[in-house]
Image 1 (cartoon, rainbow over the protein chains, first blue to last red):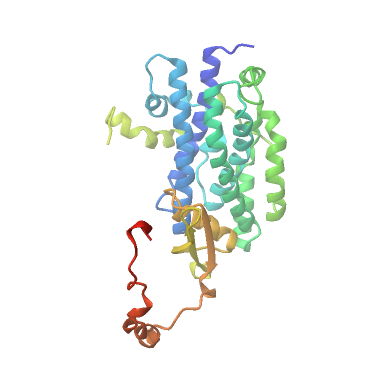
Image 2: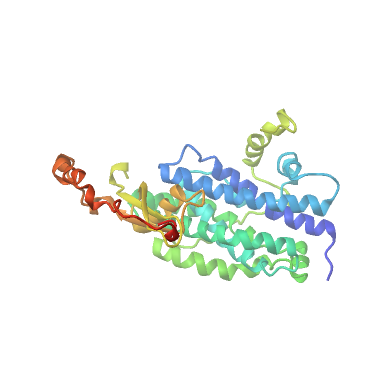
Length: 253
Length: 95
């Protein structure tokens, strides 16, 4: 089974965009976290994700081979060209929202990177080897907060419950299969997203049980991010992310 | 939850195998699990360690600064406790 160059590029960009956008969201907390310890913990995770995004964008540039660089992919595409899932672009909300979003995304990403350590694509298996350890920590860190907030005070429990309700519609998209993911899975590059759900549940369900939270049933699951159709918050995120490169093209420091 | 309710923990890091854990600072955290994570995030960002201990600050018994003179000054006049009076043959090398 051979994979067209365009297909591999699209797959790599989907993963890269997930990491860049969530990394950017986490970086928005820098200087605003509820305590100094989290003010370092969240940018730490952001830097892990942006580092993974960089490796993926560099590979995307190599696959495309027409002179575009990692910066062009990260900073100079239009909104519709970003292929991240909707969950990662959701606004930070309160600390409970941010930790739940982090926990769910990490619980999805960890089994993905874990399987990709055995990818038939050597570049991706190399990136996976480093990323899988970073994401394991994200699960632990965010998961501990989900437990403590969910099973904490009346106030923290209410906020965590509200976060579960608010983010529930964006969970299904992570595990959606389409023509591209089927091709990628058949080629042994990465597992089918739907196949990641049991591993996700094995991580998330015990934490939710301990936190006294119920896994939600989304009435109207949202999707479209993988095709470049984003929510109303994405444009503002990109405006902030891109404005330095757009104002001072090629700026470096 | 007010900040004052979050306990303080002292952080000890072992820089590499064979060395002792060394005090490097403190963090706020609700419990020991979170304290370890906070210590990891705050104090090991530049590869400082291979192992972390956290100890509730309240569990540390400290010497009284007012007793500094009686505790520590008597040793100042006992230079014979320092092993500086031995002739060391060159062949021994660095000790």
